[in-house]
Length: 197
Ligand code: 5GP
Image (cartoon, rainbow, N blue to C red):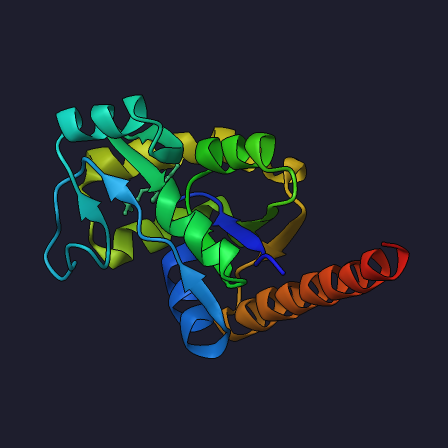
């Protein structure tokens, strides 16, 4: 049985990274490591946080059909290498992509069976607050991310579900419970299909 491809998405500052970390500890899902042209920040681990590549390398990955999806976000490129995801799914493992909405919608088009989860921030004020307090981006970068969030939030209704990240614990529980519902549905369908063939 093939694994399920889960896509966790939403504006920067919604808490995707924190939710992801919790999910990896508490659920049996495998995170795909993206490729990016953005520079490696202090505390990030090459090959674990991202595969850091040059624009030339990124372009050649696209040309060679190695990307499942990719997008330009705030002046840098981010993409999901296809091979690792495909081999995990083929082995029956559930895979998690933590990506922004342009890429999430490309995945939906390409693989309609993928399950998309949109994380909603409690308010725009709180989103801005989180971007400021985490202290990773400068003021100009925060403005770019807030401006991207306006379009991103309008994509939420295209996702399979929307979950509010107000309280982290509740949010993680809601995501895991949604994962499990999808797993039960998939198992039941497989059972029925096996009965008729
Ligand atoms: P950051 O620079 O904060 O690490 O990431 C910026 C945005 O890019 C975040 O919203 C993050 O979820 C998204 N992102 C990370 N990896 C990928 C990817 O492989 N594809 C796409 N489309 N977005 C990604």
